Amino acid sequence: MAGPTTAALEDALDDLVAADLVTERDDGGLVTTDDFEATRRIYRDSYGGVDEAVFRRTVADAFGVSESTAAERIDDGAVTREDLIAFLALRSELGDGGTASDDERLATMATLVAELSPGSPVPEAVTELDDDSWPAFLDDHPDAVVTVWRRDCAPCEALKADLDAVLSMLPDDVAVAGVDGESTPVFRRRFDVGTAPAVCSFRGGALEDVTTGRRAPETYADRFAAVYE
Image (cartoon, rainbow, N blue to C red; front, side):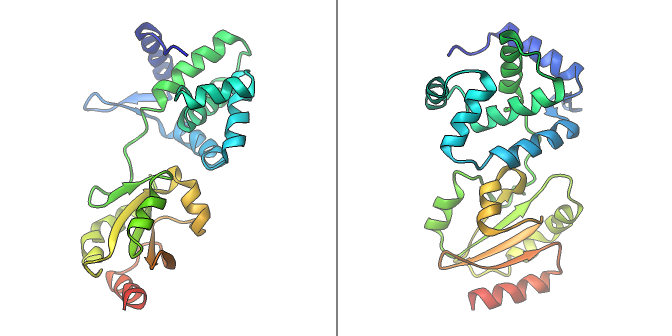
């Protein structure tokens, strides 16, 4: 399936800005708005972790095509999960006119929006993982701490100020990574993590402790000692 033209992308961007779904930062960069992200979060929670059969059926229903055509588009990389989530969120925000041209317009917008996510809440000090990469990370690093973050989260921002001190309390052979909780529903469901920030301590590949909220550095030291003694 051919991608959108430059003119179509420019028109779609103008529409997104006019609808207050995308805005320009002071440095000239483009970001999605908080209101749009709140809608996208709903669809990411609903569809980000579904199995391949549900993903394929949802693509077919959303774009009005057969499941075989949906499978082809998925296999070709023309429709990713993030594309689908962005498309559904945009349709919720802007309405669905029900015509092929409306779907094409929303699909073009989704192509842009999928690339215009707000900056990650995961601190630069740790390696960021997603739902595709965290299983391999834990396979490679059975002793690991995976931190969970969220945008617009005051306790998360407070914990970032203590992060160097917290991580310094870990044994040298314990790997550290982080996930954006809103973008990793599979991780959250697999390990029953519903709060950010969260510090998940794995020993021998098994989750041994989850410390949620912002705690004093000494609290993390005690938790780490119990897991990695």
